[in-house]
Image 1 (tube, rainbow, N blue to C red):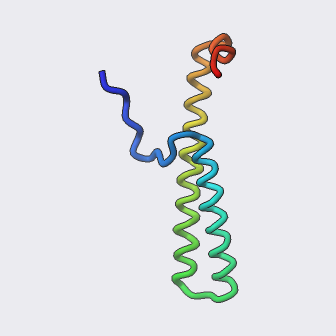
Image 2 (cartoon, one colour):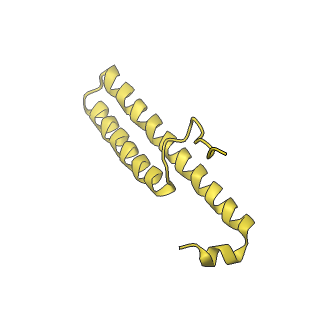
Length: 85
């Protein structure tokens, strides 16, 4: 049996990776907003929006991965949490 594939929306492999990438992308989005406020041109706002959408995508992926991990641990019972390293 083949292992299950990742869903098409999943952009990160681990929750930690997703949170780090989301933070970087959202930081860059805030930077583009700051640049766009200082020198407002339409393409600067477009870049800010694109970086923000990417950051939110990574954030959603990380949260859903974390929820899936937690649900798997809860179904396994409290002894699985002790055994997991």
